[in-house]
Amino acid sequence: MEYGVCHIAIIPLRALPSEKSEMVSQLLFGELYQFLEEEENWVKIETCDCLYQGWISKSLFNSIPTPNAEKYIDSKKFFLKELILNIENVNAGTIFPIYKGSSFPYPENEILNLGKQAFKIRLPQQEEEIKATDSSTELTTFATSYLESPYLWGGRSPAGIDCSGFVQIVYKSLDINLPRDASQQVSLGEPVDFINEAEIGDVAFFENQEGKIIHTGIILANQNIIHASGKVRLDKIDQTGIFNREFNKYTHFLRIIKRFL
Image 1 (spheres, one colour):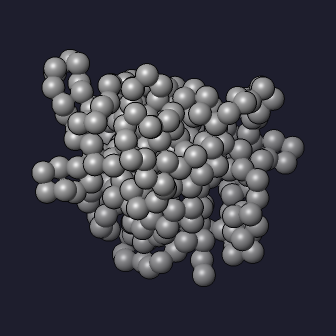
Image 2: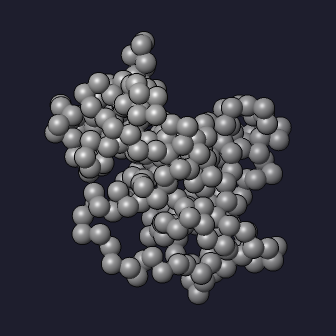
Image 3: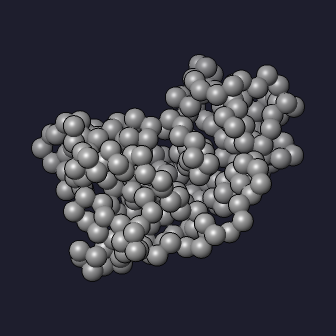
């Protein structure tokens, strides 16, 4: 069994081994993955947190020894809540930014080793701040920090994010691992029968005319929902679905609400 770890800000994860193939997701800095197979200049991998598969460029495969990977999985992780954090690749002597939503083991004396790569990381002061007394407040604060982030199919960063990637990252900030896609997320959690019983942090799923789950978002206070549609935005939600005040119409039709907290 061979493992790798994302050692740059973002690695595109593609459906097929081709630069022209659809980007189905992204790896963020520090995320661990397992090697599955190789085809020419491409490697098929499976993420270790949500078991999502796709292809990455072979040139970006950063191997990590299996014993180290096993320790990596069990290690306590730092989760970045700031927009960006500049870190230094010690090997290359270069400084580059990583994005909010990245997670990695706590550095020792400001040094984090990822396979053959070493990084100097000075953590921001977020961990020393007083944490919210309840998860709903913490979730709301983190989720709304993504407002105005552009929509990007397969994206998982503030530079571009899709609806299910947004839900996944917000819950990851609470140390809850959800699957990557909305069609997978909907199979988990406890159903909420009525919209007026929904609580902050509940996840709403929406369907098309064929009954296929095509969208998701997180319910906040006062019948608001935060979701990625064009951009990360706030809209009103009721028993019918999401009502877009700019278009003065329903844009997404509610299928079910699930509770994960």
